Image 1 (cartoon, one colour):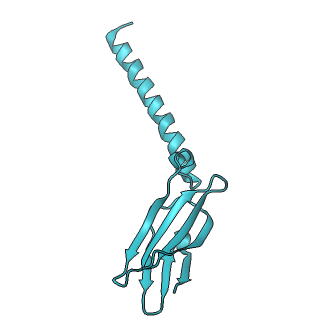
Image 2 (cartoon, one colour):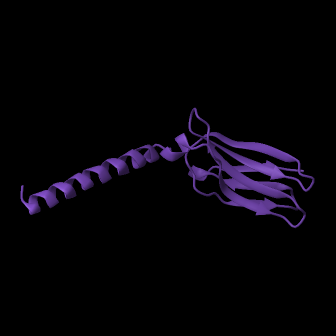
Image 3 (spheres, one colour):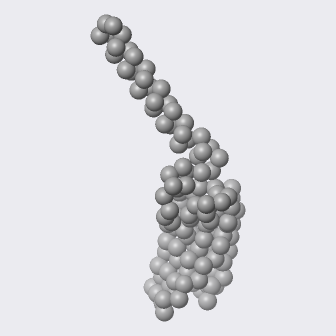
Length: 123
């Protein structure tokens, strides 16, 4: 086999392998699933806000090992008490979301994918 043919064969092999790898990651993402999340148990912080009063808010998302992702709002009070509010128990993969906390009215507004808006009252 000539050197040119061998280089062409290596290039073709690398191109095919790269296409397969990209397909393995991108095809599930088209259905709303980031494949590494299926195998790695961890929660992702999509938004976070801390208030001067000591209240803290985090929007998290994690693979629920069933039907897609759980997206939740965690409210941590100044005394350390944690309240969990489920925003969507069957969500698609999201990388970030807008979080608006209104301290005067004690509401947290989260805009999820597809334009869905969730408003959570807190104390």
